[in-house]
Image (cartoon, rainbow over the protein chains, first blue to last red):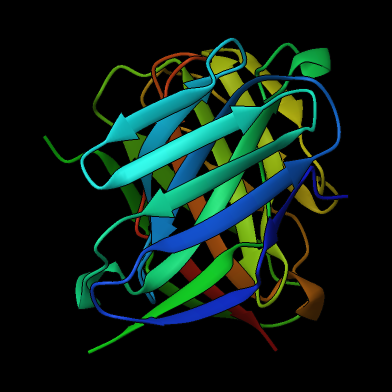
Length: 113
Length: 112
């Protein structure tokens, strides 16, 4: 079964608005990662947040992690048409020695011009 | 620096045929994984490796074999193709467990 679940499954916003995607997971993790996938392409790593971190920034991306709620969020500020893609969270479960990386089903983000 | 190279990009197989999907990386990464992506299912882990000579099963290993004789290569073998194995297959590599994966561009496999 999937370790992570993204919410919402699909999100459509206007260019310039902020986009927020959420990820919930089931077991204790070593770290959580976010990836982007443009249609028909491979995934691209965006950001990694460790279990002892609460927030991390990278350019227009902000990731938060709440281990007590087993959840994370990805915020994209000032969205652009080029941000249209699917976004996946992936978790490294501690009980598997953090060797595996398990993906959720993704959020499909559409930025309307 | 080519990153992760997957071949072929497209393949059509008949039920019962076998084949090997190739994956090579030139970044000296220890960790490599194979995932399959089906519509609405996200990515599911097939097999992974934490170094040459070390492999382990993921979520959906049945019908697939892997080996890791070198750091660079991690081929995925389909033993007897079934229509349920129609999917897009991604190979990925990373330096260690605290790093993100670099993905290949994928192999689109159709089994008829």
